[in-house]
Length: 594
Image (cartoon, rainbow, N blue to C red; front, side):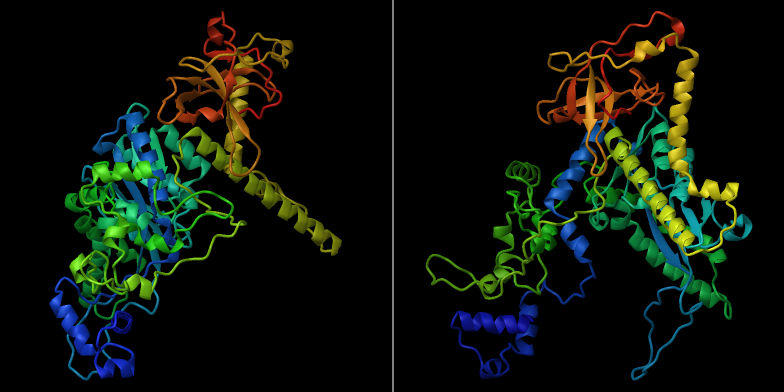
């Protein structure tokens, strides 16, 4: 492709080319060899396979969302490097990737022994800290029952073993991983930590989010399909880890002739590779290269977003600009903080497709000056590919970058979970009706069957907590039923300020709008138009007006558009046993209160 492009470039600029070039419509091999010799900074490389989703998702827009939320968390909790962690899973199999060997020339088949054709998958969960420390890893074995004596043979003290038939991470196992994380970091409500991870479904269960909030873990998810650029583990740890693991497994096979490596040998091999790869130098390099710590919004240059150029086009029926470039003010901010920042028109417009990005301008085959006649540029001969305009009926991404432990995001996840449960129940009911119409005989449902058809453990926990709060209040309340009738008092006509109680509306992607009562703990930030809010929880029945602060402090940033109005001051409580409860003379009947 490069040789043909060189021929087309010469013809377009009326350069005399040899006759073999005209005959083959391509430059010769000797020209390509000479071109590489003249420019020693260039070489032939085998590109790494990168999916279209990863190539196009890493753009200025997605990066800006992540960096804004990261900065918000760092400033809100004043986190140091010893409080910033990254978690991710990686898989290893019982069949190693074979290294290159020296063999006699002319040999058509060169083989080396492996345990089997296809290996069994063991998932390892790695957790690293920005100060260079690494936690003992967790392992998920493809079994139903956990045999610690055999599965954890040779593993260092502190490692955690889990099982699942598939060997993959699940929501229930991730809760055990969080418990393992808390036991080693000693985090709490007084000592909060930040845990950065991808937005896999197993990481976003309600049980895991509640456990994280109770133990002072702030969960921040990466934008979809950007972990290869923004995850420290992927940048500098898991690459050496896989190399050391394959070396160790290959050495094990040579030292144990006639034996097959099984899952019971993996804990020792994976732990040894983890100790060699998760070094302070590698860990700190990963956090530094992603701009997480030290926090740096200018760590990525325009060349890093070159893959998103293909899908850089506006949305249908929208005035939104490029999806792979940030607004002008954000671009100026990056330019001010990064001295190496270059505009794409200066560094990429003269690039030749097929040659690595980052080539200096003198390597380009066109040098246009005011004294020379205009030359046809390479981009004019073979323009960069461009995707077609987006369709208006796009469903959008399933995941997004978010602070999972904040109340708005948590409420959205709860709504999705309840909607999924409702759909499953409808499908089961439809299947039962179909079977009855077909005359299929059924056995009498047992208590176990009813439990399976009921709500999930996550929904039961939510309902149970609400019942306990209501029961606690009923034991200590002297209010009559009439005190909680829906009164008709409007909002207070004033500008919200620190200390006011306000009504907040959260509009999730799916489902109806939900509402919360919160107290402003700071005035509005003029730069972001956001308030800092501490949320309350409803304690009585659905039409009650009584709220209290939860045991676990729930604070988050709320945009001014989500603040519906200022509530009247709560009715003061005279009895000691009712201190901490807030009763508002306001009609909440038309709101979906939480």
